[in-house]
Amino acid sequence: MCQVTSVVPIAKMVGSNRIVQGTGIVHVLGDANLPPEEEKALRRKTVLQAIEALKTEAPGK
Amino acid sequence: MQVVHYLNQFFGGLGGEEVADAPPEVRDGAVGPGRLLERVLGQDSQIVKTVICGDNYAAENPDVLKAFVLKEVSACKADLFVAGPCFEAGRYGAVSGALCVDVGTEIGIPAVTGMALENPGVDLYRQKLYIVDSGESVSAMEATLTKMTAVAAKLAAGQEMGSPTEDNYIPRGILRDGFVDKSAAERMVEMLYAKTQGQAFQSELTVTTFPSVPAPAPVIDMTKARVAIVTDGGLVPQGNPDNIAHTAATTWGSYDISKASDLHGEDYEVAHRGYDTRYVCQDPDRLVPVDVMRDLENEGVIGKVHEEFISTSGLANPLANSRRLGQEIAQKLKDSGVDAVVLTSA
Image (cartoon, rainbow over all chains, first blue to last red; front, side, top):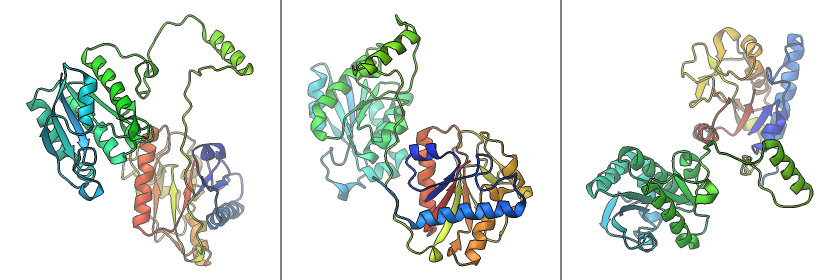
């Protein structure tokens, strides 16, 4: 599992192993200030980061 | 005092996992650790009945066991119900907690159990019960029974229970008013002073700790993986068909996206009262990125977008409840053959 969140400290605190930084609490995968195409490109970038994280060995005690 | 004691198959002497499906049975008098319990309780008390049940049977048939125990406890007019101690045995702990609650509420006599802090029974029942911390090791049997007996004696005598440290039980999360000599500011400065001096001090707040979670192995080949989207941001179809609560949700839902390549605001709403949901309502892909995931599926970057996304509301939820939701969702995903999950949080 990879968690995409805008509040990384909380994800870390509860022990999430794979975390990707989102764009904001109100739109974790997007940005309402961007034109639609750019916003989708940003979303794609974030999802690809999550997919990369899923392929990567994660630290876990 | 007349006491009824509950034991699992192991402590009851029936055997190990191979008899974990044994249905409840009752014996006269004390069995196994019950003999030690009887000695610790003293001369005025005796264990009149011992109920023994296999852990799997107990976990799978809670209503049968509950009825069995309530009948035995009422029949012998017991003054006290003791379950365990259960140490780290999870099923045993959860069942013992449930039985203590049932006996307490339905028969109205004191009920006490003991288990290790990590036992899931603690999370489930510490707010409702006095649970003694047994630690992990069975070698602490006598010490644990002694503490459980002291708690039971206080409860039976109707005495007011002291703090968890005074009376040796696991904190129940109850705040009680009390008189103190010093103001918060004075106490805080004293603590700070002690800290800077390297002296011991007792914080008045307990910080929640989270056990570390083992990291799942990486997905070897994402191009063959079935990937599910899960969110705690509360996206649900219009009308909120599963009635997921906006705050402290107790349920989650699973919603079909097999034919969707883009989510539209008019089809969805958000069951979450902890953030400004307008942006997600405008375009749900901002929380549940079906558009991008579908593109990546079509391009062969991932194998398959799982046909349903799962949603709940992660707001002001008691930890025990969140854990249950997480376990249920994980089980559902496992059963559906999902290889990887993208969890999006508001």
